[in-house]
Length: 138
Ligand SMILES: [Zn+2]
Ligand SMILES: [Zn+2]
Image (cartoon, rainbow, N blue to C red; front, side, top):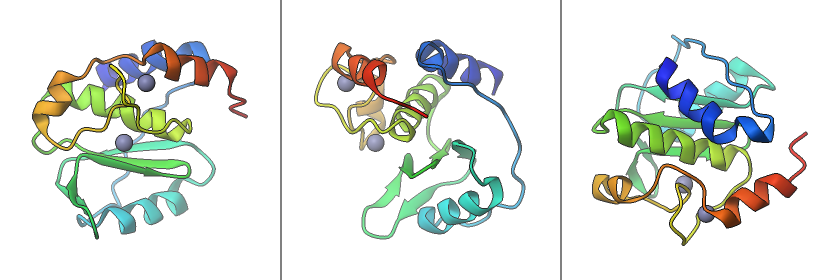
């Protein structure tokens, strides 16, 4: 977990993002929408990326690695090796900072399969980076 937190700070620290690790023991089930709603209530105003060990799914999209809404993002480590998990964590944090999916060579490119996660870089492209630099994150 420390390694992941460091990767997030390496990628987003320059934009003023701080990382805090905390366990949430009250999450159960694989319904991503339900989990996100619960997280929003549990953690209030903090921007949160929650990593769970089990597979999660969206009602209309089926199984997903992660998803984000508002201030909360969810990531499943099921089926992802460390390197891939790190990329998807950076991807979900990008969504929390209002970045959308990116068609470029970019960690924000959409990944449906493990192969797609492996193929994409673990950094932001210059376009997404510029978007964050010009964004007002407060
Ligand atoms: Zn995404
Ligand atoms: Zn990009």
